[in-house]
Image 1 (cartoon, rainbow, N blue to C red):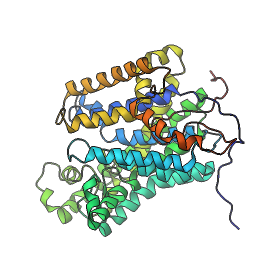
Image 2: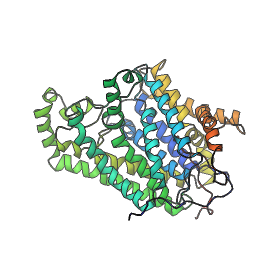
Image 3: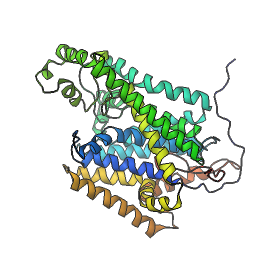
Image 4: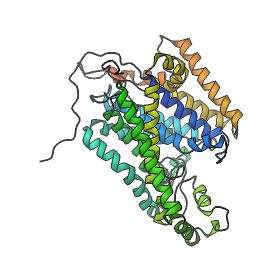
Length: 432
C-alpha cells in the first residue's frame, strides 16, 4: 500500500488579505530588467561594463522562471501549504491566456524569443507539484536540475537534434498541419529556446525554496543568499574546471571536428557550434554537458542559474527589511507587480518600432519608461481593480468567476497563474 504524497493543507478559514512581499517583487523586477539587457543592451563582451551584459545573458529567463516558482509556492501558503483559489480550472484558464498571448506575440516572426507559451506549460505542469509534501518536492527539485538537461540531451538524436536544430520558438503557423503540430510540441518540450525539460526544473526549485524558506526571518534570507552563492560557485566553477583544466575543451574540439566540421576554421569552434543553436548544446558528444554558458541547458548551467536566482531573492528580501530601503526600491517593486504587462509591451515594441534596437541608449530607455510607466499606472489606479497592471488586472477579472465558484468555506486567496502573484500568509514580525 502506498502513501499519498499530498501536502497537509490548512483547515477552512475566513479569507484574509495577503500582503505582497516587496523583496520578491524587486527580485522579479531585476530579472525583467536583466531581460531588457539581454534583448536590447550592448552585446556581451568580457571587458568593462560588458561584464554586466555577461551576467544578464542567459541567466535572466532562468532566474525569472525560478522566481515564478518561488511566488507560486508563496501563493499556496509557503511553509504552510493550502489550496489556491479557483483550483485547477482557474490555473488552466490563466495558462490558456498566457499561451494565446505568447503565440500572438510570436506570430509576426520577428522580435525576441517570447517565453510566455513555454510559461503556460510550466505553470500547468506545476499545479500537481504544489500538492506534494516538502521532502519529495525538494528531492524532485534536486533531481530535476540534473535529470531535465540529461533527458534533453539523450532525446536529441531521436528528435532530429543530434548536431543541430535547437533553439526554435513555437508559432501559431506550426498548428496548421500534422507535422507542424509535432514540431510545435518538440519545441515546447525538448528543443525550443526555453523547453520544458530544461526550464521546468527552475520552477520546481523555486517551489521547493518557497516551501523551505520563512520569508519573515532575516536568518532565512541570509541562508538563501549563502546557499545560492555557494551553489552558483559549484555549478559554474565545476564546469570551468572540467572544461579548462580537465581536458573538456580538447574533447569538445575533437567533437567539433567529427560532427561539426563547418566550424573547425572559426576563431572559437565551440562557441560557433553553440551560437548556431542560440547557445544550446548539441547531442553529438557527452562532453558538451560539461559546459555552463548562457542558454546551454546543461546540468551545470541549471545549477549555477538556480544559485543566482536564490541569492537574488535572498538579497532582495534582506534589502527590503529596512523601511528606508523598501521606500527607495518601491518603483522597482511596482515594476515587479506588473511584470507580465511590461514583458508583453517590450516584446511588442521589439517586434515593431524598436526592432533591432541595441546599445546602452535603448536599454536605459526601456528601463526608465518601464519603471516610470508602472509607477504612474499604480498612482493613477490605486484603490481600483486596475491597480495590479493592465494585463494582470485583466487576468484577475477573467478568472474571478472561477475563483468565486470555489466551494463554500474554502480559503480564497489569489491564485498563482502568472509570475506576478507574490502573496504570503501573514506571519510573525520579522526577526532582527
